[in-house]
Image (tube, rainbow, N blue to C red; front, side):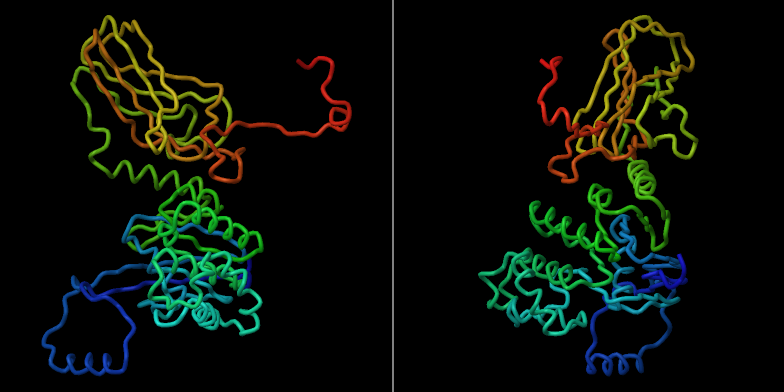
Length: 415
């Protein structure tokens, strides 16, 4: 991609905030008061009084890309969007944004609470740089999508947060911005409207427009985005294909929580680690292709067992049991062992899963481990395009239409 094909570029972008001070829009009286206070301030602030919300961000986002922005709370995601939307100025570096930007960063951003819903549609459209005739052409479509027909002439201050969000999203998405910035505001709406918004963003993406989408819902990121950027501590940790970035992020989230996987009853036995057979060391928990797969679990025994039982179970991110098995009458010497489970394939919906393994001896639990990191499935998707019809399995299926079969009905061999 040439530089001209980049919708967004940032170079050494940084944003520093003063700790304890919330940045806000300033009137002239605020600037004068700040200047007066500065005359009487003695001493200098310590560098510890400042926080770098963003540090040395270098990005190139091409026209038509749909990019997911992920990271824990406080990582710098919202700050980056505010810089790109020209709501806040960077402290260092710069950002170039080529094209008209529609942003949905906070509920009610760009709206006036005293104006009616109707008036706010025109106000928001004008802020986006739209002509009045252009807004009028899209007006009915915006109102129908937002589902606020009955309240159009009611002041916005009487709207619920969900109603405000629906109207804000409808304006931002329907007035055809070349770049759409969406923060975690979809969490305000109900599940039905969230799916409606995702469908609309899918339409915007297919129209060739650029989208940056912040969400803590990894399934939403997987559905919409081919590329993901993981931000932590104000810096980019990983940038690449969605499946690989989300796999790294989800594994790190589990590994960093010391409360997970600590139910280890005795020292007689200990599961040490696990991996996908044949995977490289950096991606030992990742499955990218449907096909035969072997999972290995390493176990260390401090003493032999004569009548052992080994259990293994697989759970999804909602802790729903997907599969389990028990192997009985194990006779094992002390030392290290590898338990291997081979499958023709694991046709699971892409996402994060967790193995649980256990070892028993004569009804005594020797070890129970919720394996870290997670198993991450990043295979090609063979499922329905709507989330509510996805199910759990990702079964490869060939579809064909046979003219002869369609004409003559079932063959003589059918039952």
